[in-house]
Image 1 (cartoon, rainbow, N blue to C red):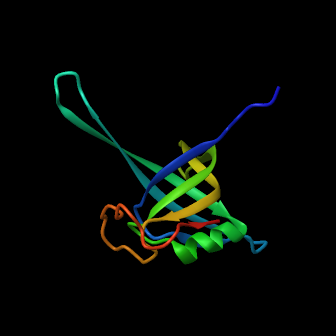
Image 2 (cartoon, rainbow, N blue to C red):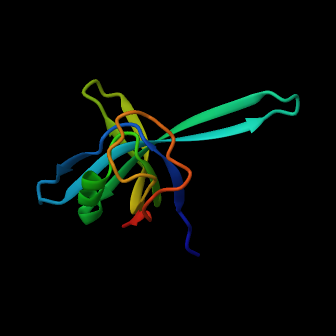
Length: 130
């Protein structure tokens, strides 16, 4: 039986994407996406939960993310969860769970955002899908 590992998020970039290349020349881009969830408790108190997701994209999608995304931009990301482990120079084990993107759609305005501002309710242009 096969398993399923799929995640979809919509949020805002916390920083500009960073691109690097493997020794074989393959592009890899990393960035963080913030999501927010609001709810009301039974006694009427409003709560907000913020979650940060580390995202990586490979190959042509990495290049596209670097070209079209910037801090504050609203984005839809679809991919799979992956947990990597490594040992630091002191022998301590570390783990990092990240989303490996296989699809990205630019939401909201298609211009760089340098402040965290909510995307407008209706964008002038259709979303960019990759």
